[in-house]
Amino acid sequence: MPTRNQRFRRILNEFGPLEWFRHPTERHPLYGYLQVPFVAWRFAAPREELRSVFEAAVREAPEHLDWTFKSTRNWMIAPTRLVEASGPDGRDFNEAIASITTSDQDFCAAAGEDLERILRALDQAAAPGGTPKS
Image 1 (cartoon, rainbow, N blue to C red):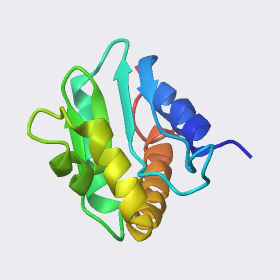
Image 2: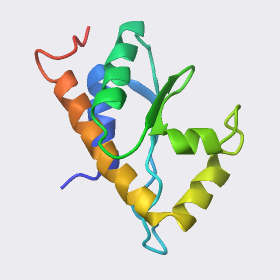
Image 3: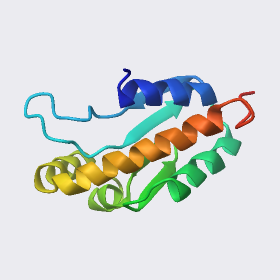
Image 4: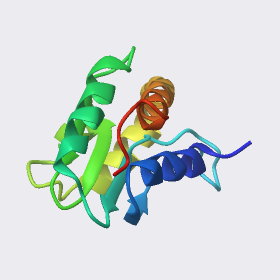
């Protein structure tokens, strides 16, 4: 079965070719604990009309936590707690990931469940009859 990383890549590519992509492994490769999930990417040719698709998935799909969709040069879906812990300019993003991952495995599990729901919502939006791929 494909990993969540592979599934996200495939689904995002349905919306348009990716230029850059980042998604952590679900479990730490050495220690085996769950990691804070998020997905960040850059489309080769971003389309403004896609923003509403991602905003809707982040707003409607999660069951456990608040999520944030950001779209500047890079687009990102992340738990709001991670975004807030990263600071106003995101400078502390990697430190926030490490802190939350090592201190709150329940949060990581809930975030993983929510991100799966977001992934399914985006997969449905990318399906025929969903979002146009032009």
